[in-house]
Image (cartoon, rainbow, N blue to C red):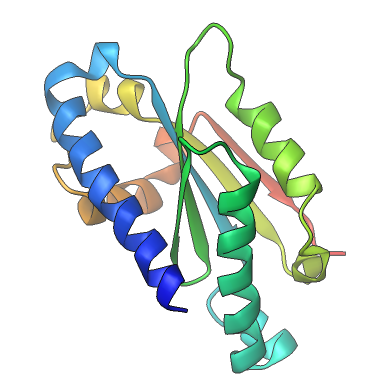
Length: 160
């Protein structure tokens, strides 16, 4: 659990810095942010019981971090996982990389709840935005509230 907090802290600190860079240089900085929402806040607790659901989510945070590149960061906010992907437009396909990791996940038992996955291209969002979020918490809130308009891809993985 402590390392969960450390991972999240590193994620938030890095995202704060990225927000400041994107305000000034959104054209030259390619980074995507992915949100994986595991049902609502109660669905995993109802399926497993609160302690086991918390243990599963904590374990998944670490598994996701190990599954991605060292330059990708994973953070968790409740049942929402956020993954920060630096990319190059020419060689990286964020969607394909994400699907490879999710389908190879050791946490198939968490597939009992529907997952909604959204991919946000931050440079595009900051280039078009009238008001640009200047901190990680404000950016995450802005993306959650405006997901339908801001996400470049949104898809659902159904429960099995």
